Image 1: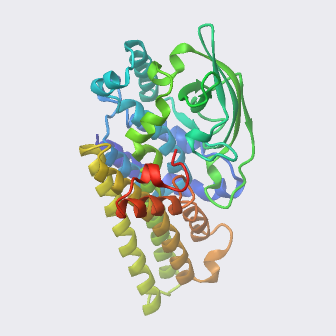
Image 2: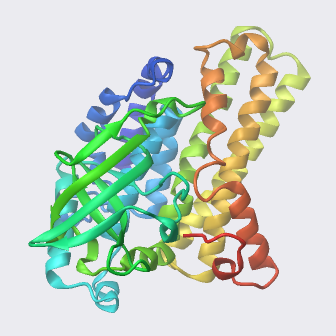
Image 3: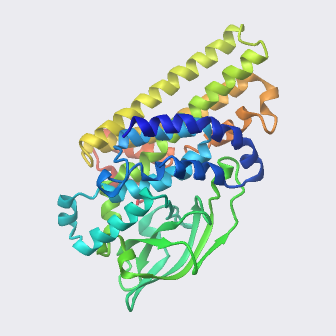
Length: 388
């Protein structure tokens, strides 16, 4: 990368911030933000250079996501979903593909999807379902082989960017074998219906609506070309499913500190020692969370799937989510009642920050995973609820 990508993110963040209040108020999707991301070439951030992308590492993605979130956390959160799809696809090396049994034609199909992203297409994730959350083993959306492809049927919830993306990463269960879960890249169009259900406390501009599917797709839309890879890939690349959100919430926390400083200086409250102390603690906590996210990202790049790497991945998600919520609450209290009015940046950031702990894996699940690991157990096997 990509100094270019980081500079582009820093240039775009003020534009996103200027639009954020309107989209939050109306619950509308930030279409202009995504036009800016496309024009800046950032949809190709995780696409290998050989396919026309920027070839960013996970650490570089984290840095970009943090800067985008300082502008609008909702935009950064939807961008994260696209980065997760392209990042996971781009990380399938020849050695990994051979180990997983991925055929050459599936690699060619993957390359077509990645090249399209580098040229401006962007993808959403349609994984979660009502009653199952993001647990792949509990999904009810099904797929059946048909002549020349697959038939998918089911409903997804919390599909960020629903109705706006060019394609959707859909996890579904085989009708022939309930233990087999596969993933498909379903193009936008006929057979997909968006039900507007997203009217939330925070991250209101993500358009995380329900998505109903009754659609047929060509054979090459089965990612990897092999059924049953979804659970395997989830365990090989937990950073994309667990901690890719973390950088976004570090950015939200930093935005809350920035907004609080501006408010306090404008209101002549910066002379109060208690107020300054709150900002000081918020700054230190956010810096600490950012260091943990950076360390997790560094380890992902150097030793993906390693036991200690995965432990840092879960730490990053836990600390980013809890830190963002605590920081936003503290600086809002420092700013006073006037900052709680609808439309004030701190009021919006407080609500956005509160969502960090709720994304899968939730903070409670992260803490349980880390606790089992600290006790010498196997966190993926010994938890009270299935991780995937």
